[in-house]
Image (cartoon, rainbow, N blue to C red; front, side):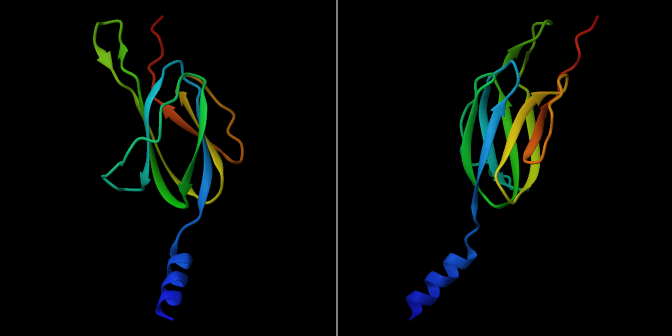
Amino acid sequence: MRCLVLCLLVACSSAASHSVKLTNRTPRAIEAIYVYPAGSSNHGASKGKLAPNAAMSIKIKEGNVDVLAVAAEEQLENGQRERKQATQTLELRSALELIFHDSTTTILEQPGTIGVVFRVMPAAE
């Protein structure tokens, strides 16, 4: 009887998982993508890497999550190096697509898609 009650409690308390498509629409590789409970200081393990214009799907538990994407290191014109990051907090209730893009480009956000922006300074003319 105790085992049955315990099984019911576990079944009722576990959150549903949803498929999340991750799409990289930047010209640079994304070396790590972290998805973790909103506000947590522990990012956990990376969910994967994405080449430019590549996509992958992962399963994420329903609820409030933070997404952190870390791009490959780039050499700037002034000789310095930079590693861009993009973050987004979202309430996951159904399947969706996260599109990583630069702030200098626009994407068409539709129901079921969310843009995650890497801040890029426009080129000086």
